[in-house]
Length: 52
Length: 242
Length: 228
Image 1 (cartoon, each protein chain N blue to C red):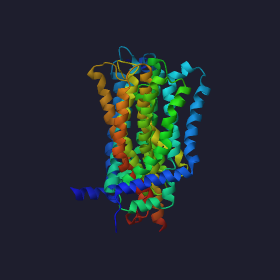
Image 2: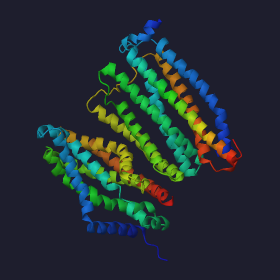
Image 3: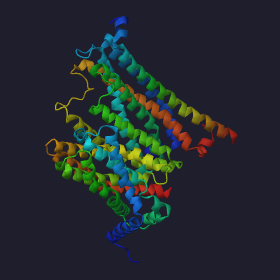
């Protein structure tokens, strides 16, 4: 299928792209969340060990 | 074998191991998810009845699968933590919960979006969506219970009991919801199921499921590292620097 | 030192709770009043037409019973944990599950059973036909008893938590949904002229499952709450 068809999704563009978009958002947020959880704790652990 | 296990369960060792493992989960996950998305959106043919809308299946079904898988994994981890008193297992359960809850939310949202063009309404009380909704309540209850305690040990152990009670209930809930929906539709067809399709159309589905599983492996590894650091605040190995 | 037989210990617990409650009967009456009040909300919210209310009467009675039972459950273990009785029980060496079950049983007699007895009255107010009384009572008997055990697990987990009753409801309601489905559908089926045997049997099965595993979960939960 060409780009036009691809974007239009047979008329269901709104639904399909919202669904896939939401999936991307959820995956992204879990990605950021997991990284941040780890990084925050690493930062505070470093702070504590350098403070001693 | 047990020495290996106990070695793994020791926080500094687990911390290091998970750090090494994570990229081995993460990159393949990204690749497979993108592959599955492309395959599902481009390569797979449109469905005869549902047209291109059915492509939503490729994100809806794997999300639903992950929501269930993670809940069971969470309950197993919690059970291991409770019975053998392994803190790492409790940490794994805690790390998994938000990931599982987001997959549940995604399954509900994509299911709802799929339902609109197919059946004209934003919500249907069909067996799968209703079960997913109740599963979301179970996740939220678990997370709410965890956060209501200051004492981390009580939080771990109480939520573990809840998770085990929940996982035993899940088949009962599924069955009762199925039964409830079939009362008015003698031919029980889960509304948001795959249309009768050929095997080729299922390939992106399997790729996406594997991709999501690897993604879960990556995300839980990273979160678990954070959990370990938080719980081991005052431990000597940490005081010597990471 | 003479060891009390568990059956007499459990019996003592059962009788003591009933006696205590008798002196504070208003606490016992409150869930019952709540039950009637909640049931009244539905016609007010929808329609006074009994023929329409009849359609949902089984469901409404069931939901009201669920909520009223949950309301009463939060305080199930609170006073015993606070005054140290529970700690004694944990340390006593008696099988904790049985003692807790005795407590749950007395609680059910005081809160669940009155709801069950009132249910035909409340149901009739919503247009429930006489033919459905038996099924309604039987389904609620099994349902409220199961709920008491499930709620006991939740109460044991949330003992001492601030605003614990909301959390308790959040935890227990999803687990109680199968009960609601089978119970109210049984009533619906008998009103349609079908046999309610199927859902009633499923309710009984869930009850026995809960009865066998519940005390185990409750004693684990109480130990966790008390030892922290």
